[in-house]
Length: 475
Image: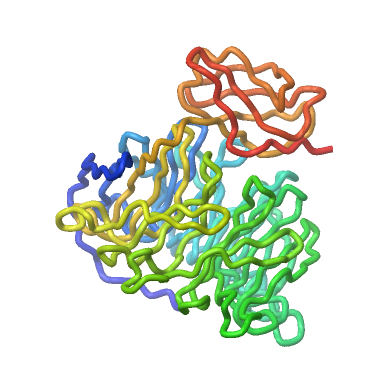
């Protein structure tokens, strides 16, 4: 891939549209239309922060038309936090596909696809107020062109992948500290015939066992991608090589990453292969037993959607939610729900409004805000054709989320939520914890003595709020 500078895109006045589209007790709302100046092509998902806002990135747009970091309230008030290529020769990076992850220290950490000292991408830290620090500029041998964001593991370090670079130029897995100390954990295609995989297109997820799990777009025993496990020290195990079934019925080319659901299994997608050649949704156990749950484009004309561009997310109801970038009743992408047994329901088809005011081609994955609603982005469409941010209410209730998701007894923990003012108790798997209410969206607490792995519950004046996933108490 080359660093191709594009021509100037039209700039229009930002319009915040609160247009809604209701269907079967579901409410779709466009909360922001990008204008170009405030961003264009938001390819990444969103991240809920302790201040109650959602944070995200755009690939283009911003002051230098090289992408930006933004924050947006759930009501649709958007503010640019940082515009990339604000430094000479884009030393601060340019063009990002990655969602910034908020770390334990309150800062956001992410990657840019290009820019930096060698124009091969960067790892950066940015404060909520917009002060950016470049932690690492990729040089090629240590990786190049990171396409995804980072995950902060229970050891406090950040882990990620690059699409290219490394000893064979087929991508790497790396670890980086908040100080910028950088370590290559694995260079892909280091085994005969690239049996360990090539070109990771997606990020990593830390499993409840402490290991990291991910996918490669290519390589493996059949050249069609892999699912792998890697320890924080760099020992890699290939769990599955795609196209291992006749006709590639298990799928080919897993472009997205994995999620670990509350049932302990991992779920992911492929963009090709399966019964109809248009990709699959699959379940895989931590030991590598793979089950195909759904074959994409199972109906004539693909009304169920096509092209699984983004990873799945688990809702508080235990179902999985995702987007398909094209297809659906109008051909411009869909939002869907799928059970862990493989029953898929299309919730929304884009371009359902006049002039595609609701957006076209959803790009980033969905995130469930602690208010219960789902939020996401489209890469195109909307009032000015520069993409949108939307919400979808499907009747899921509010919940709380811990930051981080694991810790030792005595560790400082932040609890994210909605309307937390007036909270009367906090408990870790039934064990009461001391706490301080910081704001309506944040509580500070510590893991209490006697706590064990399980749910976190916050009691407020209007009821009980439970965590979507279990908090893991570490030794």
